[in-house]
Image (cartoon, rainbow, N blue to C red; front, top):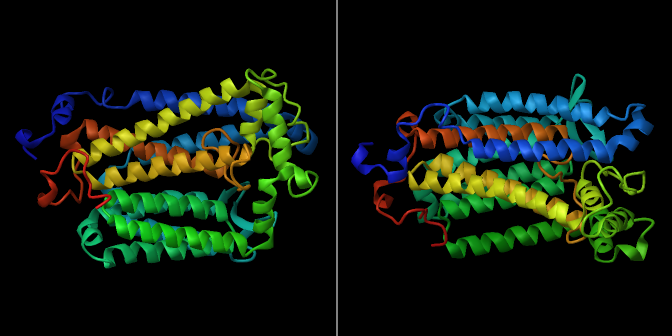
Length: 409
């Protein structure tokens, strides 16, 4: 690409050094979230860890272990040029399918609380669905960057990714992992929209997907009980509504400014999963509504920064990076919304962690990998001459308004 055709922001960044090209603002936001997460996990888990494992710092040590592995994995991901992620997206689809099949094999997959979602890898376990999220974002970004025109012009371009998504979701539901299925469907639908799926196609797709999720949610007595209990948890507060009522009590006790760090009562064996799915309730109890609001603002800043990278990538016709960054932002935002919604009684109970905050080794590991990919995309945007994408926006679209990607036609 000659300099006369480069966007202004790309020309201004060509002379930056390697160090200056790193998006340090994202690293600062990430470090802040991880620090908050480490403190929150320590506070929420100390009593449970002491009673269960005889070590009050058990989950803190595990968090640090997975954080170390995640940072290492994130550095590896960040060190690989985007062109290779774009080129081998199909290989990651195969990896995802193999993981989802392997976890369902008796003796290979580990079953916990009725769900067979984990693979035992020596002293640690890996949740297959978390790795699948990374693989699916890379695969669909690669696919859409190559098949954008087909997606915009006929149904085949829409049917193909939907078939792949259907197979992956089907395998997830066999575990079962309804929460990850919802997040993945929402992420892929968002990526299809930004890639140029026509509005009427998107509406039909949304209605079909929503109908399917409703059918799945009501087809199981267990999931149906959760749906009913979240509407009025106090009606059965010692059974199906127990977890949510304890979470709401934590929110109420925290009021505006909280009881003080470490002073939560609900974490003392009242609220199950206090350090994982319901860590937001403990944060609200100890730091109050103000403290929780600050945390959510910081989390929103991270999502916004990833969305800005997506916008700049699409402006530069770097389709893979644009779609991948958008998918990562949607996945983080969706998972965060569901986690907070569940803890506050807005949504039915789902087993989803709050990225970087809740204890969850696989989630933390994969989120670090996703951030490594984001930092690599940002770095290549700041070094346009070193970015060699396989697919750019077709010439017919090069003169389109900045940021236009065909979505909503």
